[in-house]
Image (cartoon, one colour):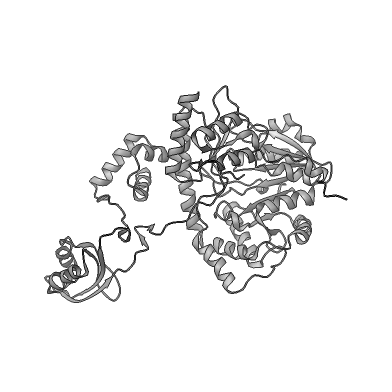
Length: 385
Length: 161
């Protein structure tokens, strides 16, 4: 055979932001609000632990599911923070980033032809992941009127009652939306009633600015049908270290581990040592980062409203999702803004149905840059709108 | 408490405009200005200064950390001694500390000679001071919570998902 891409690969279009990246590379004065990762460095204690692990030569494979003491720390952490009780011996698997955990779940539980409902707009990797696993994607658009929360009405309108699984991501990338216990209760009921497996990406759980993060897995009858994804990239600013985890019933973790042990063997050992230290001693760093994000969040929402771009009250992650002015597509607005003012934002439709007419704006950058970027956007509006 | 939030932001960057502090705290600009006035009036905020990396300037600036031991009597308290020392403009900081010595004093001058003379002629002769140990600052790496290195470049890509 020749190296002809498979049908599954051909079915996945190239990333919608690649062209923007190339335009941004042509300028040296770009302020990027298009970055989906923290601007903070990994807390020093975690980096120091990683360095120390290298000095001691701790570079061997770990157990497939991750170091036992790390899994114990994760179990204690998720129980303490989110009321999620999982057995570190059988119900936790440590992965190379939460992205690997998502991929493992799709490959472990989605059969060819299975329909996977995906709440949208959402992180761009879910659709390809389902496609690579042979599943069918069913977009479930959320609406600004609902503050981009997933509702039973939206699920029913999309035909999700006939789906096999549901993917949700709250706090949400790209909208910054959150769902509290009241919001989740009806979705949990829907999942039970229609016998859906639930894949809940909670990577931004720590970045919840008003109230407490709630996990759908804590609802009656949901634990046995849910895989929870989380990790260290966002809360602990450890994106490049690639460390995440999944929480699920023992049989589900066993299935995911079957894929993981052949494809990855084990998550990066150095990163596991960093994560162990992060859970042990970096709570204060996380609080400081979250406080900083919260101040920027308020600043950015306030400025967008001042300059006449409606912006709903995002309460999680580090994104806001303002509306583009009438007469513009999100893509055209984002491209012109980048070319003329050197401000990089991501058009909302990149993130699926429901994202049209909006921009994803990351506030994971310093306040001075945010202030300058908003001034440039204001100037763009004055001249072009 | 909003006043506390305002204070934390001033400590982060005292040059933030009141309007920006208001945006970050969901307060009105007038509320921010009032909070700052209250903090100043109550003596909580004592002043605003630049954090300077003296090593980046061509002219010399000499700083020393001085340990001071004192002896007290019924007529003289720590406060009395501190008040006397703090009046000298060369003394930039003065703290009563626990441990092997009593006062930790930061002194600045234009030369080692100037700092040495100040300590030997103005500080050491104070009757209650029994010992001075002077440590000249060779390199400063962090001041007032701000690292003085070149910092880490933002090596993130301009677009990530």
